[in-house]
Length: 96
Image (cartoon, rainbow, N blue to C red; front, side):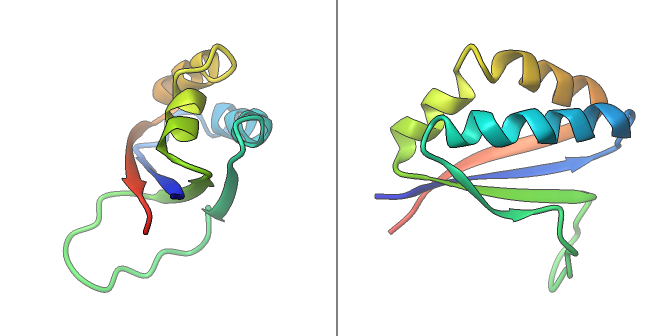
């Protein structure tokens, strides 16, 4: 069953670092069978408050693959880069 990681980011403090994060994370996601299905496009808030500036959605073959990416040695330094450069929130959602 596919699984999705949805990432929200705001309070960007270092745009250059986030660009480097994005470049390097593309391969990290792919190395765990994932792909980006939404990344940095325009957000049209239809309902409710929305404090985030950026959104990305990744699809993985299953939740185990998504967790393997998030906990990988490859992603650990990228996670620290993202956390230093912005405020973010990531969720894992299992598909149907």
